[in-house]
Length: 258
Picture 1 (cartoon, rainbow, N blue to C red):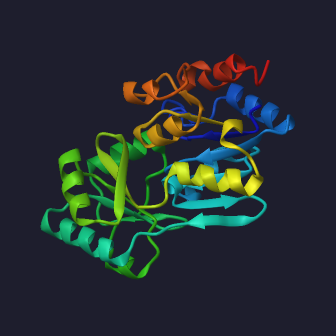
Picture 2 (cartoon, rainbow, N blue to C red):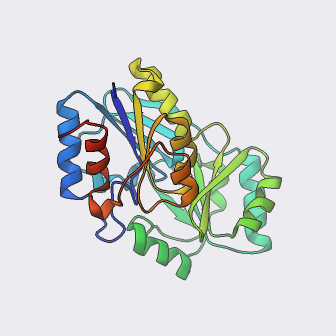
């Protein structure tokens, strides 16, 4: 019996076309909540980017790809930040060969500089309109994640130096660099333990590369129709995309709603 469902936001709950949650999905979420199913978010967004979910009955939030997890009733359950030594290395990399980087704090984000790549991603997410300027102060702040506009080769090269970090990407333009130990999977573990639930009682929905581990880990996993092939391959079910009632259709397939 499914008692907890974890949802990615961008491309899963929220359409890249309309930048909103479809009305059919909203009603499905309310129906699940009335049945007593716990609803959770599992996103790369920070806490400040959750406004698009206003009015929906979520019990808890895995944000920043698992680095900051909080519950609507009990507050912060888990948090994980990048070590200063790794931030120093990243700043060295930026100085050596500059690229846009968004340093994510608990509530917001600050870029070193913005260019057309950052603006293009904001046009997709409507969540990356943060300011740019001096970022030297990040060494003295709690940084949970860094949005780095580099290709995969540069990403691997930087991770070779940043020994306490990992990376994930859902778009070819950038990767999210995060500290080891905090992932969407870790967030799921935190919430299942908090609510006394078993993994077999969980379900997860996602569509991006940063959902791969989550969908591979959760036995009842659903990949959206817009997900890449490798994400679909590790999921137990593939549904339609967000703009064609993908979530509703999957919930009906699993007989969680009628």
